[in-house]
Image (cartoon, rainbow, N blue to C red; front, side):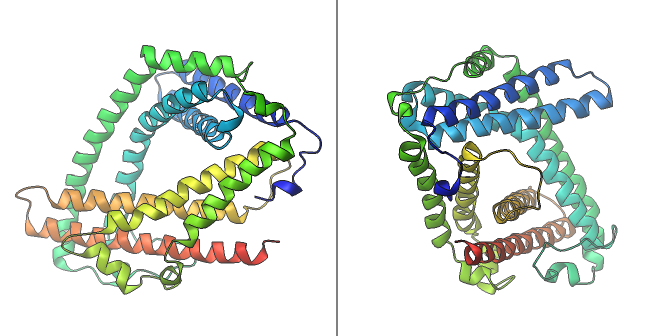
Length: 347
């Protein structure tokens, strides 16, 4: 983060941190009100989904900001609120995640079996081997059953997540979180350090968030990611005893650190007119695709372990799993390309 170049001026840390948290808390409360006012018709359901998305976004920003700038706050209060916001955001995210995972897998099955036409590859990536292969009779037969199995499993999971979200939003625990955020909209419990100049205490913490991101990226196998669908990564992803979860974890961690870095930048930034996506935004989009594809591959693998499924169904799920692991590699390739360009143009 180029904190030194941002317009902190002679402001105190609290003069930047408090208004940002006030704004995010107001977004949280506004989204909550819209969610409560949404109706039961299809438009109301769409409004509720959008309000939930905005609610989660505000919760993540508050939590991330309190994490990065924790030394400037009342740490006991900040740690408690961060934990509760993480609980809320995670609970609300599950329903959307299951729905998106099911759509992704069904679209991939249609494409692989020839039922739904082609789809464009991820930016910067070649078309996967699985999508170039002509569908076999076994795949065509098994795709319908695989789709039905995935729909049954993920719809059940989504229904349970929806019930859990509704229960959470009606709980006393949530009302306590909402009360704490309502307080945050008018009064931020800051510590004595926040009275120091922003350039002395706020900027170094933001730079620290950037440094942690760079260190995490440096630990990634970006050399391998520069080659789409590299054999070593795919062997790990398709092995009988898969190590893909452990292999994916560092990339997921970079995604979280990139988000914290972005929120730290927002704390300093002066609002401007919309512009073309920055390198940070493009990198985040690539890592979002990476997370989605990795989780979809896991869902396909889990479905393939269902007892007593037909061989054709298992075969289709195996092809689907391989296809999603290819998408993981495509996303890594895209991230590597964006990151290298961003690093090359950085001052």
